Image 1 (tube, rainbow, N blue to C red):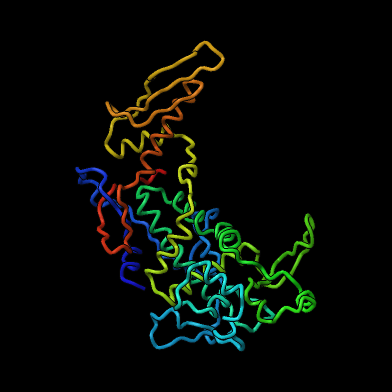
Image 2 (cartoon, rainbow, N blue to C red):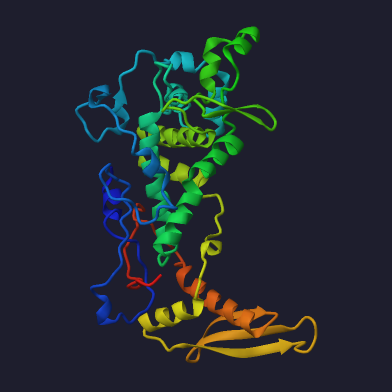
Length: 379
């Protein structure tokens, strides 16, 4: 992996917030470790309700004797498991759906059709064909790295809990399921062998669709049949999301880091996520007091700016949240209490959703780390 990726795992992207940096902040700069490495013996996460997708996948242990790799340990494209059967490049080039998907994603000539076939083949108990298990694991690490890097560079003051939620909104199972099914047009192989035989479908055509063992099967609308109880059975959302991760890892193996980063930017980060709606403040007043105290600013005061219809059925009050002579935010509501709370919440969001004018990620060539703030421990 490139030096920029390793460098980012140990420090956070920062930018200028205040020209005068207090001496007390020199030893309290907050860092967020973004490395997705997680061992099986690691203690339980402190965020049990907001786990990254790779945290679920990395618990699938592999037997060492089933793995082979070349002498170059950094050649990630050379890692593979031993299989009895594989689809050759010549056979894969005869599958219409693979050719269509390759063109739809605007993949380069270096990206082999057989890699796409393997990306759409999940691990099943009754198949000896090469599956996408290792590809999806490595693709999950690539997605988590670049998406987290983008969020930290764009919102350098984002709290960790909100950062995890935003990352999951980009690369969670259901988000990637929507990308694979509704944007890329990947289809699941849901027809039986009898239906394929009656339709006189060539054997190779089944490898152009997503193949996996499902927990459940929808017999007809409103009726669901319990499917396989095998340990390899997965949900439809997980199967589609693993296909996306496998395709990303295949792009890294064939075209390198820059092409993978551009692909993730165009297909994943281009989706709009409203980070502001992920905040939920239980006591915005108390939190704003602590935040301003940490920033060595005056305590907040609420001042009425304007009002209309106080004695009517639809009054409107507009208040401002001030710190000294500086107005932090405005809030309006049908009562003074509602307007006050809205102004406090908007003031907090204005701080946490701060965005640099020209954010640079650590993997960018012209990246220069700068100082933002020391962060806080009370969120």
